[in-house]
Length: 159
Image 1 (cartoon, rainbow, N blue to C red):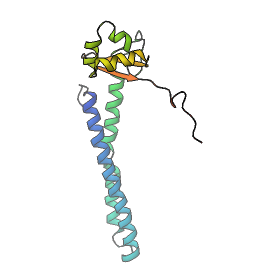
Image 2: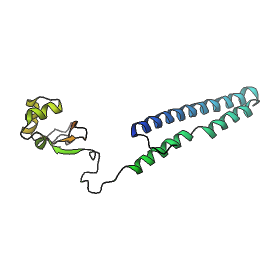
Image 3: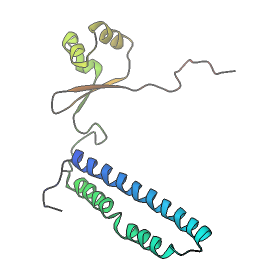
Image 4: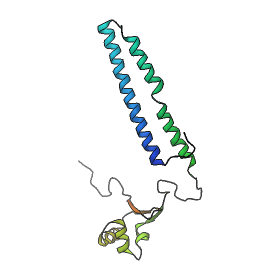
């Protein structure tokens, strides 16, 4: 592996490829096991040695790429800068999180346009005090996430 770390997306794509390749090898090994069984039943086991060698080859060579992809993810995870001063270290740590009211204060039309909704929908959400957090990403994009109780309060239980 070279010294530069791949981007997370590149590592994920490589890991997906390696896992698909490993899945293929497992399917081939399963087919070999069936072939060994059939050879034993119908030909007295004459071809078992050769089939076993193919199975051994798959076993010895098949998962190196998977282990390499796991190592890349581990290295990527260890290389991410850790910021102990960051107040929200969860999934929203990449950007700034604001309540919908904070995000839209004094600029409902612009805020609604950024979120891809109408100003009326934004105003309704604010009036209903919906629990919506707006995530502002470093690239300037925004995403809104609503937290709701489940099941909804006041819902009747099924009888």
